[in-house]
Length: 280
Image 1 (tube, rainbow, N blue to C red):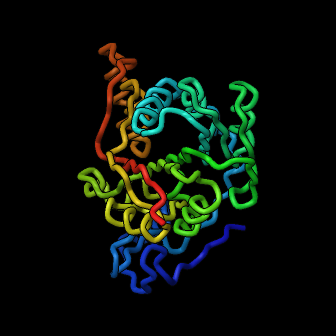
Image 2 (tube, rainbow, N blue to C red):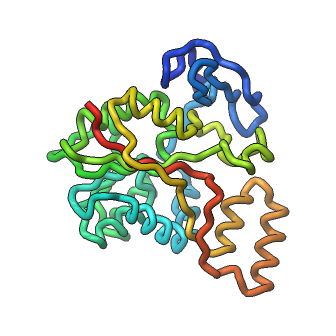
């Protein structure tokens, strides 16, 4: 049975006034905007179970080269050269593998059983499957990373506060990437934007993320637009995944021109990338 949770209070500012942005269209729940602070979120939130998704590993390995190159860019944004690093929602462990390669002592959390098994068995990583709130660690972390995770979290302010209070070292940092719907292509795609989906509960702008960080006792140290460094064929697959005909046409054209495997850095401001510190 699918559970739906109605939200009566904005998690960022506590406001109770919402305006409808987009109605449920079979791809996503109703999308509303807080009339006080501008935070955009799904209402109702449709509960998702990430433990069993049989296509998880296949989906990630198909784009492994691009994902690893993107993870190297993410690491280049981390202002800490080494130390203990936790990735929440680490998938099959590619970012952890890259971080370990440059000297971090790494551990991951991942709910999906098959992805967790791949990270442990194929990459030799320590990846745990418990819920964040019920996982105990011996030490605190110099870096806590989460990429495209926070938008899946029902109560993000509580989530970030818990990390800051229980997992982060005194001078540690939290590195967060979230999707960005406030783009030119987002305006064109409107309610069919690929970022709008039942699994996503929150949609951040730079402003609303900074408000959330402040509420959670964090300070945004730096901001950038997230990068995707992928072969062109994989990029077309990612950005056009809701337009299958166009995707096949573009990929066919790239293949015909011999450009399918040409690695490029794609940046359409589709993602927001933040580095945060304890502000309490």
